Length: 100
Image 1 (spheres, one colour):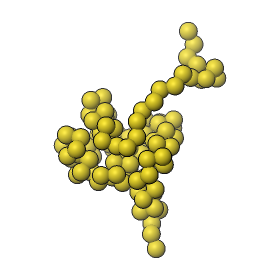
Image 2: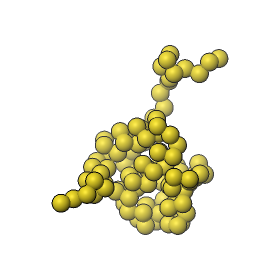
Image 3: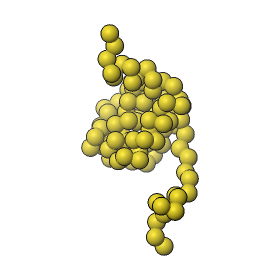
Image 4: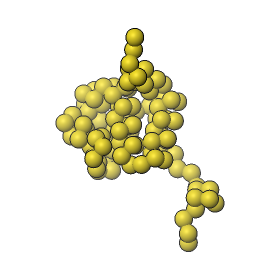
């Protein structure tokens, strides 16, 4: 019998699923996004493999993708570059628009 985490990690290997998972997490909170990114990284390359490919120290990778992580933009972009997903910006809808 497989666990929830094992099933989730298997599902996160699919780029479509991973993209949706990350999108939902970032809509929730920065902390949720970092934890989701950690799971996607773990599913895709493993933390050691991700650290090697992204050129980030493995311990720092664990730290930056923790609930209290506060990664630098260049570190975050290095991790995202390795994953099979991309960031896309869209204009906000009128309901979510920032007042001018």
